[in-house]
Length: 264
Image 1: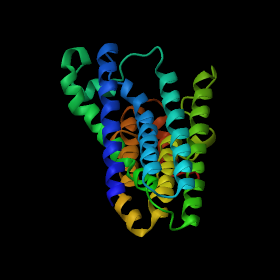
Image 2 (image 1 turned 120 degrees about the vertical axis):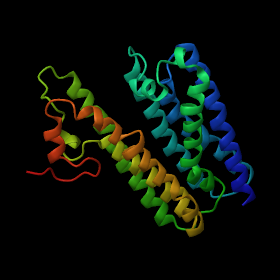
Image 3 (image 1 turned 60 degrees about the vertical axis):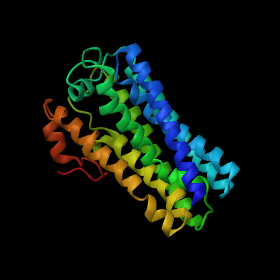
Image 4 (image 1 turned 45 degrees about the vertical axis):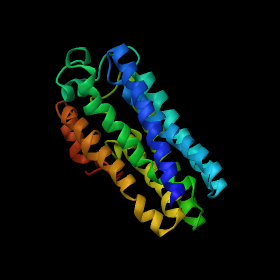
């Protein structure tokens, strides 16, 4: 328990430091949306610090390095993708709506309370399985392997879905709505992929460490799934998308989150 507490405290400090740096960068650039790039990097930083703690305490070394590699692959890809997508664009309208105006008008203090503190805490909380797994022994390798497979499914949905959407946007003869490839079966393949990745990490690092560790950390992937579906993900995006021509008809025949055969 002392090892878990140490890993958790170090992870919390790392997430807090990252949010301080990100908030300062946001003030300099006058863009709160830089926090979206820091989101993926935050999980990489937490996984790295938890791994360092594990090297000095205990736990299974093979699983520890596997988890670090998989979290880093996901986090670095996501940060790179969001950074590339944001080039040439201004502030994300969602943050202006949340704060009640642009950053230079509402002030950094409000952004810290409503955005940076919330996201820093979310990074720490959602990464709880990573923190526990870094200092714990493996109790069930089949569960760890199952988690790796689910992580792989999630990464495929994320990367393929993002690539298909980019190709759609670049197509001069594109239809009104993107309904090709994975988007034919789910309106948000990237969000579904994210959920699979973090349920996979929970299987590897949480439940793979035993039932007690699994039950103690299961709220982490539950929270990530809630954010992806209801809070800042699919539901929020749907409010805007439903105003676009052709999207309501697409939504009527296509599952919002879980991939399912289209209706009709």
